[in-house]
Length: 373
Image (cartoon, rainbow, N blue to C red; front, side):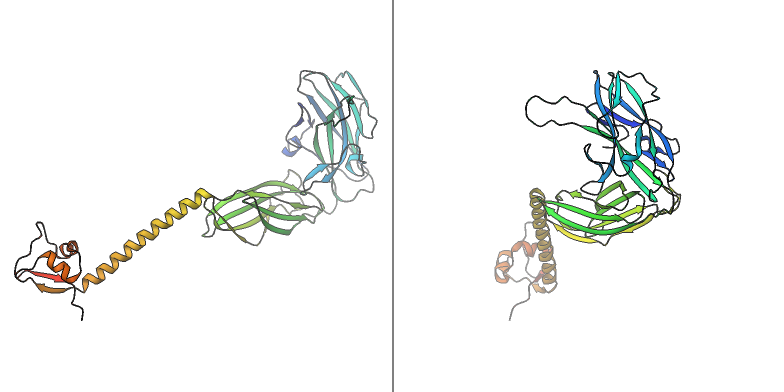
């Protein structure tokens, strides 16, 4: 919902007056307003299509999404917070519009925007005198006004929106606590699910890192990114680890880094060292893919063969060291001695370094296995 310019169906909105000192104001509205005071703002509505767009612009409260992220209430739901603080101002528009008027619902306006046009709609944020200290969130949204279908059915309408973050000054508390860290398996994938709770009174941009390592310590995968953890909410992360090719025993650790200094705010760091919150290490086993299993079995067989050959050679060397001296007698041949000692004639040749044509001479000193009692 909230990239730098929020678009849906080739129309969208973005902040009209971003601040140079805060890059986050390119994509969201960020204001600090004391109770009982008002700040002026503006939203740029963009029509990038080649036709006139009939749009509905409105403000609504924010709501926690299913995973704890940022979302907005629906058009027909009633505002109780920031959505009610936003008031659109049509008295001093900078652009000539085809048609603009207040809508039927509270905090809504209907506007027709020419093809390829951009217009700025001013609005004010009016903070009540009894507003609580800390951060309050809402949304400014736009969606296309569609004619009601003649036939019975479902009509879908896309909407785009921007977050409105208003901080009421006072004692700012910036704190995050671990809630849980679960590891689930489904359809061959492993799902890493750490969760944290914002126990402070403002939202925090938090660096999240979930490292998955092999049992011997090397990193297999690193999930994460920067996520806003909203005030008073539990944020449930869900990172999917596809079935590892090789499989095996793995460990996973989640780390959350955030600026706990009260001087920090959305898009502004205090300059102090970040607070790091680290989970306990979770261990899990994952079966390999079929192709990986075939390769592992083949590799294991090769290792077993190499080990067997190495062990036989070692045993052979120990056995050869026990051989005793023997003086070749008349009529002795390699074939005869090999049969008597139950040793292949090539072993006699190798041990005694006999060269072709592999003949023995009477009186020649060679080594043979010791006679068994």
